[in-house]
Amino acid sequence: MNCAFCRGALEITGPVDRRDTCPHCKRDLRCCKQCKAYDPNAYNGCREVSAHRIVDKERANLCDHFLIRGSKAQGGKASKAKEAREALEALFKKK
Image 1 (cartoon, rainbow, N blue to C red):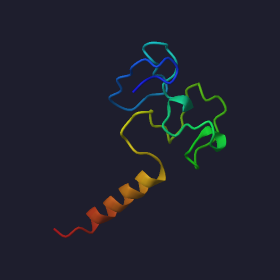
Image 2 (cartoon, rainbow, N blue to C red):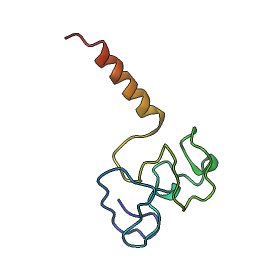
Image 3 (tube, rainbow, N blue to C red):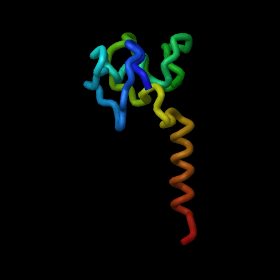
Image 4 (cartoon, rainbow, N blue to C red):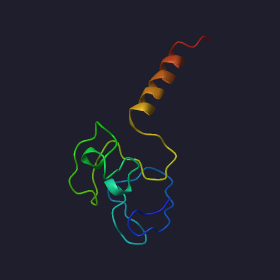
């Protein structure tokens, strides 16, 4: 994955903290422009419909829906529904 600002290569192995910055340009990593759901053409600039409005898309924030661009993880309601289904299946699974 690459930084949305400088296009420098990023090696992210775990969750991105609010204080994390790009090792190349020192810009915030946990911001809207670095997120998978960021879409300047979507309402509030985000494809996640339940996300709170964030005015400055280039500064660090604490959005619960943040997933770094290029990550293989899935976010949003679809993955939460899948997790809930799996939990229910595990609960009622015959031993």
